[in-house]
Amino acid sequence: MAGSHPRHQARFLERASLLRILVVEDDKRTSDYVSRGFAEAGHVADVLSDGRDALSHGTRENYDVMVIDRMLPGLDGLSLVKALRASGTTTPVLFLTAIGGVDDRVEGLEAGGDDYLVKPFAFSELMARLNALARRPPAQVEKPRLMVADLELDLVRHTCRRGSVPIELLPKEFALLAYLMQNEGRIVTRTMLLERIWDIHFDPQTSVVETHISRLRAKVDRPFDEPLIHTIRNTGYSLHA
Image (tube, rainbow, N blue to C red; front, side):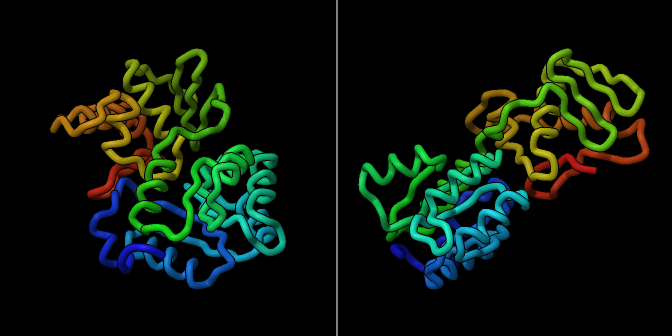
């Protein structure tokens, strides 16, 4: 692997959110290297070496991103990703492989991969690519109705209710709540919200996110017994029961 030890690179990594990562790699040296780097960057990685085990794990568990080698025992990487997509799994996949020809890259992307990185690689580039994949909106077909606990958001009628109580939301409040609900249980950072909801791709030193979160809490949480919008200190927000 190119570059220095992950500990020395971690200070340069983008810490947009804490990620849960599935690594499918049968080369122990590579898997140890990347899993150690992920841990030092504050992420959680599950490591598997067999393609069939990965298919079972990947369809059962909820990951933010997957890192998959092409040459795997049991089930090769291309077949694994095709099977994941056929099962309805939409988790972003980055192929990490020594097979690096143009046709190989195209084949990987057409199989359902979202990105392709060739070995040898720099850990900082791998992490930057995974952060970029994790920032993408979920690649699933948008459901007309979102539900988290007793909170319901109708994306067609643009209505919101918690239990039997209707909640009136302004357009930005509605968009913000929808994004949080679509990422239920995940950490969503202030930067991600600025880009997604306000289309701001720099830090304008504004309190617009905090103001809208406060307004949402006043409508969605405070009148009820159980809060759903949680602040993750120094990181962002997460909506979950």
